[in-house]
Amino acid sequence: MNEFEIIERYFAPLAGDGAFGLKDDAAVIPPRSGFDLVVTTDQVSEGTDFFRNDPPDTIARKALLVNLSDLAAKGAGPKYYLLSLLLPEGVTPEWLSAFTSGLAEEQGRWGLSLLGGDTSRAEGPLSVGITAFGFVPCGHMIRRSGAKAGEAVYVTGTIGDSGGGLAILKLEKHALDAEQKGYLIGRYRVPHPPVDFGASLMGRASAAVDVSDGLIADLGHVASASGVRIIVEGEQVPLSAPLKALWGADVLLRAVTAGDDYQIAFTAAPGLSGPFTQIGRVEAGQGVSLTLNGREIAITKPGYRHF
Amino acid sequence: MNEFEIIERYFAPLAGDGAFGLKDDAAVIPPRSGFDLVVTTDQVSEGTDFFRNDPPDTIARKALLVNLSDLAAKGAGPKYYLLSLLLPEGVTPEWLSAFTSGLAEEQGRWGLSLLGGDTSRAEGPLSVGITAFGFVPCGHMIRRSGAKAGEAVYVTGTIGDSGGGLAILKLEKHALDAEQKGYLIGRYRVPHPPVDFGASLMGRASAAVDVSDGLIADLGHVASASGVRIIVEGEQVPLSAPLKALWGADVLLRAVTAGDDYQIAFTAAPGLSGPFTQIGRVEAGQGVSLTLNGREIAITKPGYRHF
Image (cartoon, rainbow over all chains, first blue to last red; front, top):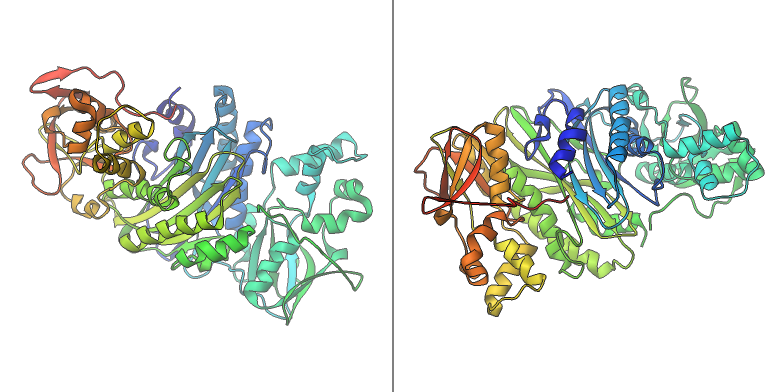
């Protein structure tokens, strides 16, 4: 198959309004009066974000979801995406078919469509780049910079599961049963960002961030952008049972510094309730501290870094 | 340097409105009343679109210009871009500095700014993905599908130079002097799309395409999308003197099937004059034919294909 046949067979069925069936040089996004367009881009690569033999639909879903997580953290609902593929030799029609099924499933679930993209042959690792687009009312994108002393810190979901799954795939020793193992590996392969939750942050969150490099590292970005100090109360951090089983006494420190969570951390007035957990507080000062029962715990490496 | 230091030092100076200094999860594009946003994405990769030891500023410029070419072909002026980098080990601060100088130069020339991006480490070829954004009056993006029988076909610039430069770099035999060689290699490394010309297509061109895969192949897309037949009159195709010197009697066939031109081909009323050349005509029917002095010339491979 040449690139035009690949586009026609696998990607054109994913295209929607403004994409012209992926048959033109560019796509169109009409202006939406009173709304800003929010744009984010993230690529996932073999060996770093997934493994070559992972089920292709999970690779597609992860590539898309790590971007929808960014949009949600900014209060934006997703609407369109672009797809850039670097495909090594040996990618089969079956692989492409399963990959696009994963995209189709996620885009159907969240109501978005493919706007365009680029497919190139690469003599190297498989890489999937997504650019995602969403809308927020003008001027209301939630920034990292609005946290204020006296507020509380919240996070959605559980923290560290993906890092646990990766450790298992990297053959770290463990005594988990198949179900626990499957849960953690599943969270590494396909994150569960609260895509729909983004809209409910509006008017409530003063600052928000996508937890992708590690909870402590990403809250560090909020602290730095907002000019505040953030205290994470370790005993409040939501941890899954399989992760506790995997790491025992080390679980907290490993969870808060593991990457690939794709949950949302945000600051807001204390005492809120909803599908999230209050994990700390904002004070005057700078940096992020982790405490356990009131005592500060030293952190040497706050999160994942590509370099 | 870690990724945050790389962003801060090299990329933040390129950021403009809506990018928040590249310090947030996403960027913002405010709605422009009466204008559609036009979006295109193209990646360039080592070994396919450039060579590892090419001057880094030319790699940056090519990555950006191949996208501005798509926008121009749609009648859109560029405004923003996103940058996705896959960087292998061994990329030095000097390389990054020269690379970003190339971006700075081109974005200054065309009045656009960096909106965001993603930088990842790759165990493979260097790859640069750009997503470019421009604006056109609502509903007026020039499509591939508007060509009508009785119109003429035009192209900007000269055709085939980049393919000639690539052939020289691939050590094809030639008898060119240093200046001729430098000209062709220069066109391979840094295309010269008519970025500003796009706006003048509006109200004049019925269809347009970016010549990137090869003149015949890309006009084939126009013929197919428009449901017409396109005749390219070989004797009218604009060819540079160095390219004629390189390929002699073969020049026409090689030029019209070489990739990487990044010129604009468009259809419009016959007899127009401007910074372009009339190279053929639109008839009822389908497909693309190449003629030389009225006789049809057979073409086995109309252009470059990634697969």
